[in-house]
Length: 474
Picture 1 (cartoon, one colour):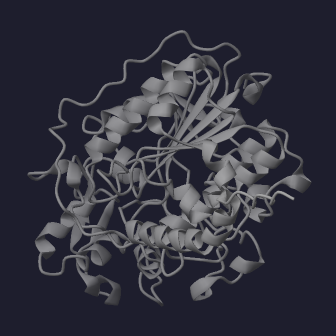
Picture 2 (tube, rainbow, N blue to C red):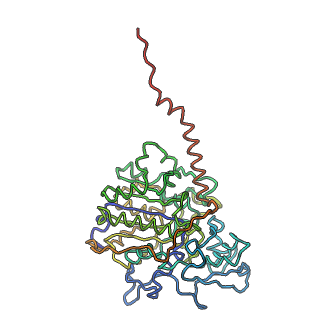
Picture 3 (cartoon, rainbow, N blue to C red):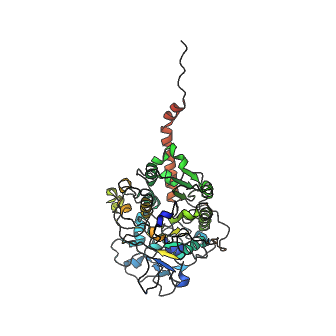
């Protein structure tokens, strides 16, 4: 590790995409070298090979499978469907082409199996997915198809040229908004689903940075209000509007060297979505990530910028690694909704660290017994910006989360700049109508509540606009 580690970083940029598991996008990242990457952090024991916890090509002895028969959980022999390399079909970048279930009961089944199941974990993804399109069970096997590095060349090339974690879990086995709440607030206030309430009355990292004198902005790829701002009503404050900008302004700020200390970047979730949420077009998400990479790496302050790309949750996509135990973040989560004690993490998600101070080919894991999750970003912000513990967000998860300063290993920045390009396999993006997903529903509901909030304040706003009465001449 470089002696001053994160001291070399002046700008932290976090991009959070939607609903893909680690195996779904990066399971075959190092399959060509038998899952032995160049570097592990922490380093393996003396004499041991480096490892990458990915997938192998499908074969009858592969341990990476799910049963397609529900009666497997009643003791029948499994009808095995193996994880395979490359998505297939007429529209391979729309796989899976039905939105998998991501509600708390479904995620619990995907990981744990049915109540009372004492067999192996991570066996319920396919059986659960079949219920999304019960009339066409023959199409369900697509859930076990993983994108090849050639198909998702942008995220794969970035991962191999910088650092990727094969032990980064989403904060909770729940839907998008609870996980994004952990990202911004260190807690979901005990909530496990996007519905029925999309608004969160919790302190966030944004107010904390504002109060402690640190610069921040949220950039999103649409003219609609960002998801982060919609989710937390205190961020509706009009005086905070300059902190919320479009991706075009992100590109301008990066080029000019005027990015804030902390930038949070969102794709488009609703209009022409490029968030990678199934069944949205993955190639559009690749284009978005390439755009962010080019802006950061071509920006004036590239040598002092750390780019983090991650996902909110797995979205029902297959992964083979069982999530470890967790501690509840606060009293509201112990227990929270549905009696859940927030005592386990969610499924693994792809998370990359990109900086000229990181060696190519790095695969990193937590240096402590606590794994990486969204709150590791908050913990890293705390330590990097020297935010006093007494002023930090009140979350036990944040307090115990490992930081990723240990991945910054170079004392001098690299002088090479990898050529990151879209795959030739990507066809013209496919546009089609798909059902509104739960996140889109929640955002629409939040927008409606915001408009009602604004209407309630109209009398106050009119008073502010009304000039004082003129005094009559005496």
